[in-house]
Image (cartoon, rainbow, N blue to C red; front, side):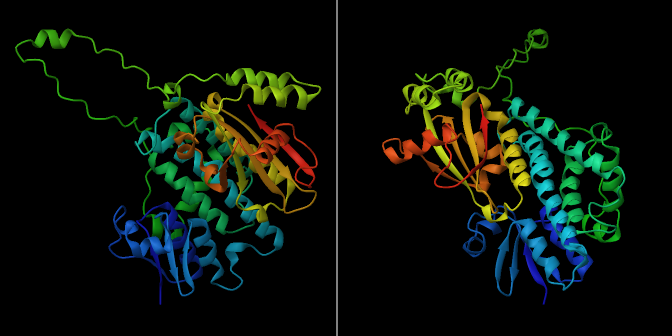
Length: 403
């Protein structure tokens, strides 16, 4: 009996379907699935409480998250070649799967979704998404200069997930003038997307001809009378005011974020007495909020430099809120698995909605609002600001600051 994949036809569903083509596993899309309808039913929400797709029904229960589903389908086949032929192959396949998610997919979405009206369009956020995408594609391009596949001499799970994420971009926003800068990525993508097992799922993919325009609300019909056509024709359209970030509309705060960042950066001695004390003197609980974050998947943090790069990537993607935030990220432990914990100061009493919408990494952390009336929590904030070591009884491997 075939496993049922509950999803519309999209790149995340295609990952598992292409894996099935290579392994011979039986997977089929659910019939009559309607996005926005089926995924809101009680039956679907039992499988995935937040209603996202795809979801795979298996004899042992349901699975969600597209990469997890693709891994599961691959492992249905003993000695699956999609996982390479050695332990180092396996590690590198997982490496490129993570890279594809954090350095490619998230930035394509960050560029495309606001233009389609699915997220708030903010020019600085778009600029950051494009810059980060070019950085990721540049690294991938260099790596592929002398390679046909990501790992070894044949298609692996890493290639399937990478090509599906790239396919989403090539189809909707990465036009030829953009991808010309990355010729090895182009060669790699078109070689694989035209392989029979890919093509059976994707069909004939055509590259986007242009970057889609920013979606705008339909303008209301002009109410000027037709008897005055010259007046209408000659009238210049008034320049549209630049959309303000909702945080700029909040009541003024007594805390000046730039003053705190300067104090933090310029304090070289007596940090606790000068900078930390200065922070609490400046802190305005009416205008700002403090949040602890804990990485959900610390058991995966088995390599120190990979963990540090993961945190560094997160901070790069938070660039869109630099005007409204300050953060400290700690990597803790003398041996793996390493723990990642953070402290963030945000403008407003909640985490800004545009940050939650635009930064993929936010979903990878548990967020807890700091109770500043709790002295233990205040002391924990102070220790995180000053990079206290040991932290909570453990070695501090690294500390990164967002300011």
